[in-house]
Every structure is written in structure tokens, then in C-alpha cells.
Length: 210
Ligand SMILES: Cc1cc2nc3c(=O)[nH]c(=O)nc-3n(C[C@H](O)[C@H](O)[C@H](O)COP(=O)(O)O)c2cc1C
Image 1 (tube, rainbow, N blue to C red):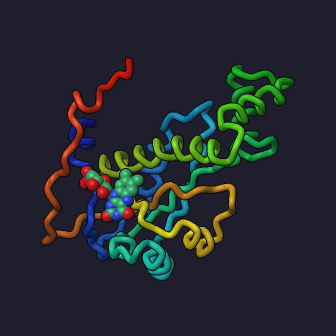
Image 2 (cartoon, helix red, strand yellow):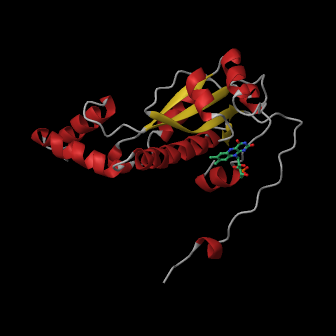
Image 3 (cartoon, rainbow, N blue to C red):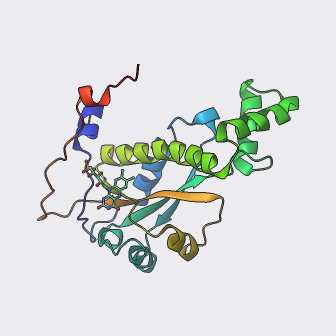
């Protein structure tokens, strides 16, 4: 599938075939493809909880306005955005610094400057830190949907869920925000996909304020 076909054929699929599993290697492949997404300062403030177990998906469905696709899809990702990836000692802030030193874009004795840069990018309050984390995790989630489609796997993004309920049920630490859930699987044959939705035109997207 060429890229144009991938982007034009991706749809939010409401009906997944519960009998058709997504092989583990495809889950890994789409995740590794999506890992190539850009992120500010390469901080990659995203992670995934990958659910396959029927009981866990049922528990999530109940917290997601009972949307049947949460249980019907063979795989559901809980997308996580890390609000604290700027902190000194954070494992991925540390790894990023080490890698930057290796590639020569940071000097080992400039750790404080590096952490100050991370903090500045994230912003000075929790609201800005959350926006930063969700912005970057959103790029990752979009890449994941397109990567899935390129591998023949359909997806459905969802923000219809009880955020604090999901946090509690899956014991997600407070440093994470959950920007969305993402169901993945194969469109159920016999079902009809709704017609493509309207999209803003180029003229509607392009704007100036002068
Ligand atoms: C962040 C996000 C959250 C969404 N949440 C839901 C949801 O909870 N339930 C749902 O049925 N659709 C949800 N959608 C799907 C949108 O309604 C859908 O993407 C949009 O109507 C365009 O349709 P398409 O994806 O098939 O092109 C969500 C989409 C996004 C990007």
C-alpha cells in the first residue's frame, strides 16, 4: 500500500471481527514503526499499555461508555503521555541525555543545562506539561494508526472514557495522562463502514490573523 492509499483508506472502524486476532509480530512492527515519530527534543513522552485479555478489555469497555469495540477488537492500546519526562533522574530523560552525549549533541558535563532545556520545553506548570506530553503522544498515536493500516490492521481512536476510572483500574501512575484509547483489529465482514466523514478544505484550513 503506498502512503496516499494508507492515509486515504484509514477509517475509524466501529466493528471488529473478534475471531480474527492480530499477530504479536504485527503489534510489535506497528509499534516500532510509530516509534519513528518526531518528538520535541526527542523526548518521546509516550508509552502503551497493550491489552489482549478478554477480562481486561471488558473492564476497559465498562469505563469507556460501554463501547462494544473495546471488547470486540483483539487488541486495545491505552496510550500514555508522560507529564514528567523532563525531570532529572527520569529513566527516559536519562537515556535521552546519554544518547545525545553519544551522538555529540550534548556534553556529559552539561547535564544541568540539558535538564533545564527539558523543563523549559515541557513548561512551568502541570497544565503545560500535560499539553506537551499529549501533543507528542498524539503524533505517536497517529503514526501508530497509519502504521497499523499499512500492515492491513484497522484501528479506532477513542477519548470517550472515564479518565480517572481507567487510571485506577489499570493502576496507571499519576505522571501519565491518557490522551486516548486505540482499538486495533480487522473490520468485521458483513458490516458496513459508514461513508467517509466531511473534511475541512484547504481554504478552510489555511488562515491568517493580520
Ligand atoms: C482523539 C480521538 C478520539 C475519538 N474518540 C472517539 C470515541 O470515543 N468514540 C467513537 O466512536 N469515535 C471516536 N473517535 C473517532 C472520530 O469520530 C473519527 O475519527 C472521525 O469522525 C472521523 O472519522 P474517520 O476516523 O473514520 O475518518 C475519536 C477520534 C479521535 C482522533
